[in-house]
Image (cartoon, rainbow, N blue to C red; front, side, top):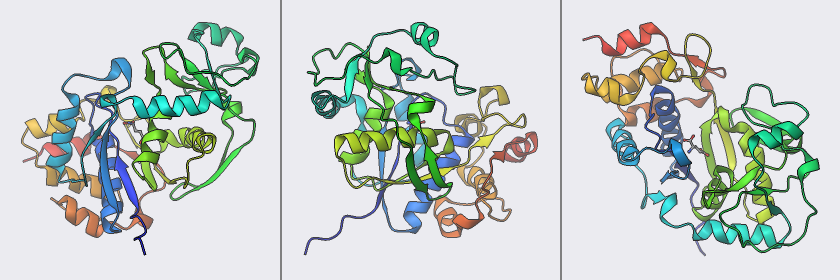
Length: 314
Ligand code: GLU
């Protein structure tokens, strides 16, 4: 009898040079949940995000994950090294009339959209801009391509966030799956990779919960099974209630490391943010041993000036 394949999750950093306390908490939690349950963990470098990708940032990210004490199984997959799996998926979607080329600019789409999507920075792509649907050949890889989003709601149970019913047709419309830079867009790349890498469990920040619905639509259109289980964890926010970012000062791990803050002190803070008791130092392995998922705060966690001072104090 063949062994059932093990449950697998992934660390999927985009090498944008911004591994800060918020991303670190998500990566540590992903790793710890998986290791505590005996799952495989793979590392994938998501370096197809155009101008946000910084040279050298992939190596720096890998180095920081190791410094924190995280490890992974098998080779590291770097998305940009081989685009052929994404081409194959595009071939499947275009021949089944699930995708079409579209080079409209953001301004042109905005002009046709009835209202901007509140707060997300994303523009709804109105159905009026969709051409007649037909099987096509994926013959223009330096054009943008969009996915034909069905009207139905996507219903799934998130392991942390609970029951979800999302309707991408209403919130985003036909979304981009291929870019003019001749590369897959994030939504397509992530689905192709999660599927071919046997990822059974996607654990990540809840800023991506809307994307889960888009990704499930792609799973279904591509005939990929099984679909992964999703766990979307609340993000770390700054004192102003906005997502942790540069405006909150330098919260990059590099910044603390360069000031001599040990990884174990950072993990102790991340542990407090995950419902663990106060301690001066915690290794990644001890974090995984102490983790009780039911104690992770269900709302966002706030990074304060006191946290920063605590990290830096000698
Ligand atoms: N690469 C994405 C990021 O760093 C994560 C994608 C995912 O987890 O699906 O935001």
